[in-house]
Length: 312
Image 1 (cartoon, rainbow, N blue to C red):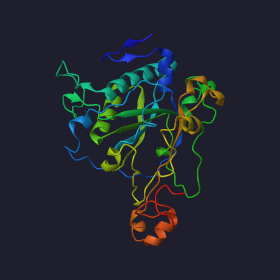
Image 2: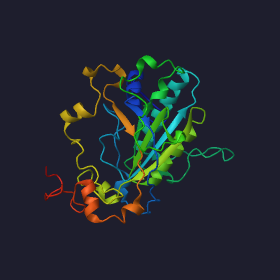
Image 3: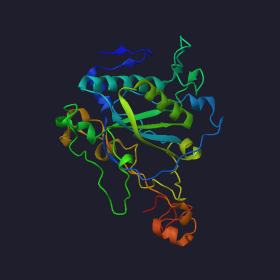
C-alpha cells in the first residue's frame, strides 16, 4: 500500500518505510578534525545541474554508491523521542522531508506573517534538487533500553575503537542518528539541514557536525576521475568498482545470508573517522618523501615504478 505525503510524493508501506530509514547502521563516529569548504561561488552550476536529482525510494539508500557530489556535511544527532511511538514519528517525518528535499519543488509560503517562515528562503522560491542525497545511519546508542530495540541491533554494530595516537573529544563522538547530506552546492546542503532541524525541534538535537568537499571538477566527472585530497594525492584509486553489482553485494550491502536482522538487508555499515591533516608541515616535506609515504606518484597517481594510476 502507498499513499501520498503532504508534498504529493508517493510513500511506501510501513514495512518499506522502516527498511528505507534503517538501511544503514552507523559503526561509531569519532571525529578529530576535518577540512571545511568555503561557500560555493554563485553561478558555478548550470540550471540543468541544479535540477539533477537522485531517486529517493529504492532497494538501497542514495548517497552510498551515488557518484560523489561536490559538497557534503555529516551531522550527528541525539534522539529526543520519549518512546517508540515518538521514534516512529521521527522516522516518518524524516522520510517525508528527505523525499521532498531530494526531489525539489516550490518553497512553501508562510500564510501568517506573524509566524516564523515555513522555509529558510536561502534557495529562493523554488527548491532545486541539486543532486541532493540524504543518507541516514543509526548508531549503537539507539539500541539501548530507551526504545526496546536491542534485539534488532545489527550484529557487527559497535562503538568506534580507539586507535593509537587518537585524540578523541567525547563531545565529537558517536550519536543516535547520523545524516550524510551531499549535493552539488553547499547552499543546498545547508538548506536541507536547516529544514530538517526546523521540522524536528522536539525529536532531534545536533550533537556534532562537519563539512567536507571535493573539487567541482572531480564532482562533475561523475566518478570517472579520482578526487585529489588536501595532501595533493589522488584519493580513492583502490576503491572497489561501484558498478560491479556482484562485488557490491559482497563488500557493501547486507545480504540475507549474513544472519543479520531482516530490516538491515539492503543496507550497509558506515564508519566515520575524521583525520586531521597537518598541511603546513606536509607542504614543507620533500616530494620524494611524500611519494614514498603514499607509494605513488603525486602527479599521475601511479604506483612507484609504474606508469599509470591503476597499474598493479
